[in-house]
Length: 353
Image 1 (cartoon, rainbow, N blue to C red):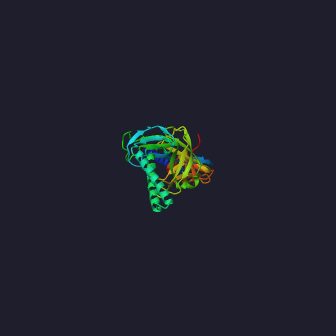
Image 2: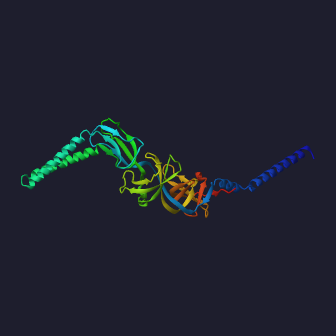
C-alpha cells in the first residue's frame, strides 16, 4: 500500500470513530431523566410544618380586672360654722369607735344660749297659763313656741358642734388643724372605715349577666404578691357607662386584720365556672398584619393542605389559648412553619426525631 492509500485509510477511521463517539454521547443524553429532577425541585418547594392535634377540655371561665382599694366609708369631721378649736383628741393613725369624741370646739357662747333657751321656755309656759284663764291669746302662745323651737335647735346645733364625735368606727387618715386654730373650709379630721374595705371595679358590659350580688371573688395586691384575699360582691350599679361600655361593681374585703389599706393596687378575679372549649398552643396563633384578627392554620390529612381559620380567643393560660370558635375538637393545627403558608397551601409534615 502506498502512502496515499494509507492516509485515506487513517482519515476514514478517524471519521468513523468521531461519528461513533457522537452517537454514543447523544444516546447517553437521551437516556437521562429530566422529569425526576423537576419532581425533586418541586418537592423541595413544599413548605415543611410541625403540627399538633388539639382537643376540647374544661376551661375555667375567669376574668381579671384592676382597681384601687378604697375605704368602705369616709367621714370628714367639721363644725357647721367656723369656730376656734379647743382640743383635738386623736391623731393620724388613731383608731376610733363610733360615737367617740374626737375634737372639742370653743364653747364660749353655749352658756349664754342655754340661759336664753330657759327664759324662752318660761315665757312660753306663762303664755299658756294666761291663755287658759282667758288673759292671753293663741297668737302669743304660737309666737313664743316658734321662738323656743328656734332657740332649741340653735342650742342643740351648738352643742353638737362643740363636742365633735365620730359617726363611724375607723382610722384617722388626715388632721388639718391644731388646737387653737380657727376651723375653715378643710375638715378638721378625716376618718375612714377600713373594716371592711372596698374595691370599685369597672367591668365590661359583656359580663353583666355573669355578676351577682354575694358572688365570691379572689383579690391580689402588688404589695402581698400572690397572696389571695377573699371578697364579696356587695353592690352592682344598674347603669352602663355608654362611653366605656362598662358598669361598676363594689367588692368588699372583710379585712379583719387591716392588712389591706386604701390606695393599694388590686387585681380582682371573677370566676364564672367552666366551659368546654378547644385549647391550642400559643405558637399556633397567627395575628393578621394590620388588624387585630387572629388565625390558626388547620391541617387536612385527606389532601395534605391547610386552611386559614379565623378564631375567637378566650383566656390565655400559660403557653396556650382557649379558642371560643374557629377550631374544632380533634383538628390538627400547625404549630411551626406558618411563614410560607396561605389558605389551601399543600404542606409536608415535619417528621418526629
